[in-house]
Amino acid sequence: MDETMDKKRPLSDLMRSTMDKIREMADTNTIVGQPITTPDGVTLIPISRVSMGFGCGGADYGKTQPKDFGGGSGAGVKIEPVAFLVIREGTTRVLPVAMPPMTTLDRVVEMMPDLVDKVEKYFDKKEEKEPV
Image 1 (tube, rainbow, N blue to C red):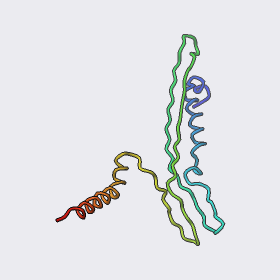
Image 2 (image 1 turned 60 degrees about the vertical axis):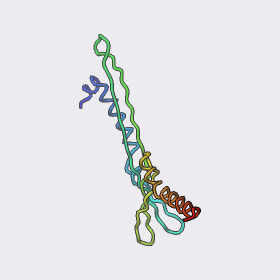
Image 3 (image 1 turned 180 degrees about the horizontal axis):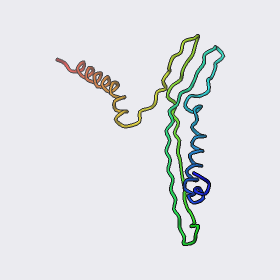
């Protein structure tokens, strides 16, 4: 777009400046972090997942030319650690970062083995107490 079009469309300028800020926040160093070397020679490289959201809107108002403009924009960035690349003595491994359960169903599935063990122990103790 040329400069005269931008003056006629302040919304595009608003969107452009917001997208520039998002690019600054989520560069490649955010996804694949800087290597960290420990004193014993192990190198750790953090890997993250980046999620973004963006919204923008505006309107021209008034009767005079050029019309007045009102608008706004917003953006959000979510960064979650996913894993570490662990480099030790020439061998590279991926060490995942465990995330907590996100939904009630995930929590129930995670608790199931422990719950089954408790129920089995309860019935085993009850059978021991009852004479046959």
